[in-house]
Length: 349
Image (cartoon, rainbow, N blue to C red; front, side, top):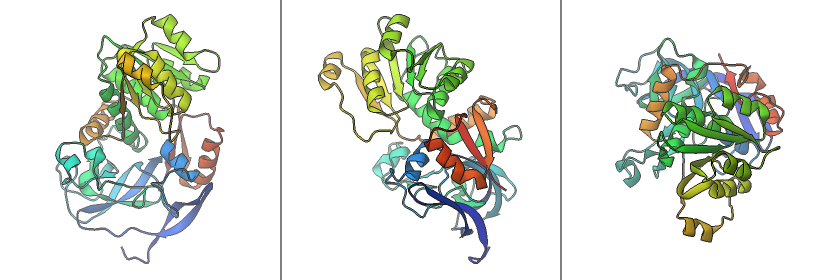
């Protein structure tokens, strides 16, 4: 395809400014494929980018890193499963492109690659008719896996990593603060790993209802209940592990107070840039705090396999599909709290 050919794209132009525009169809480098995007989810990190609060994203930019579609052009290479990068293959893709050579990559911490690039941040993303992706980042979809559900592989991989880093065991308990997409996906990830006691807190009763449907042992509506007091009633000694999927000052403090002495807290939410924590309390209780960023290749593969096995099904109570042209209004409504659904996926082509 020549550089003169154009496509429709959702372009972020600055804080709270996003428009449908014509953009050049990406040109392929060796080993890349061109994907006709079918579904692309809106991520919470993109909402902060939309507001101009995320340093990774610089306008003008086509965001979108949670996506699936069909390969329509190939510049060689093989898919993640080793098969040739054939035209006509439906795929989802790992948007975190790593060098494979730095010290972090060599020890398996590819999510911390010193040269990492994110499709939709450092290079044009999937809120467009077409996106260019290294073939080796692409996972061919089985016939039973829809484009919409496949596009959720990336956020599920993030949640799987957070659960893994807690090192929670089946006979232990896990508290998840926040029932947005990452928190809810952490719930089903934990359940998939055999964790039976999972508690979830949130401001939204509708999201908590989804959490109960997905197997939460107990839910806590923080508009009506105090998290710490409620956890003490449920399990007087505290919970063994906590995932903060919000990242606000208040939830980080709640996480530290709710976990048992010697327990583990994993921070994955990025709402507040800095937070003051009770450091002496952390020392005296020997609480382990871990950050969870993105996912490694094994996390992504595990998420993909779980979705292929039917872990998630579409449901109007948590997921809403909209056309790409509704992207500007969708972003505005999400940041203003005017959306009932937990997740919005934009449909394209």
